[in-house]
Length: 84
Image (cartoon, rainbow, N blue to C red; front, side, top):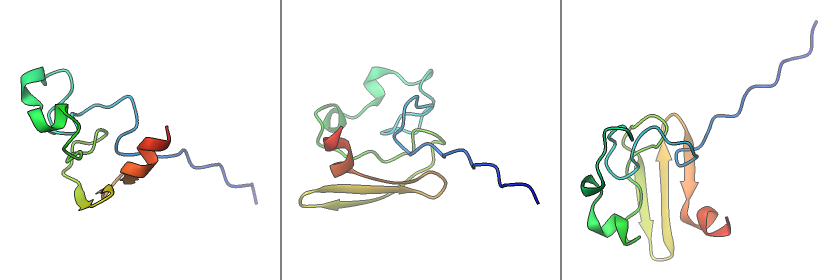
């Protein structure tokens, strides 16, 4: 029996490089700056789309932040981004 090969880590929904816009779901190369909502540019809106696959994420907004979950790429919490 051979040892199991390590499984490559799946990038998180907001990990860079991002292929899709996290506020629009449009491919990054095709997205214009005007497509991003003003509230998102001001930092008042949580991401709604996965940056890796463009799928709509389940987003929960809390008084102290937000949590977003992609069915393929996992969960990200706003508190994790503040620590970076």
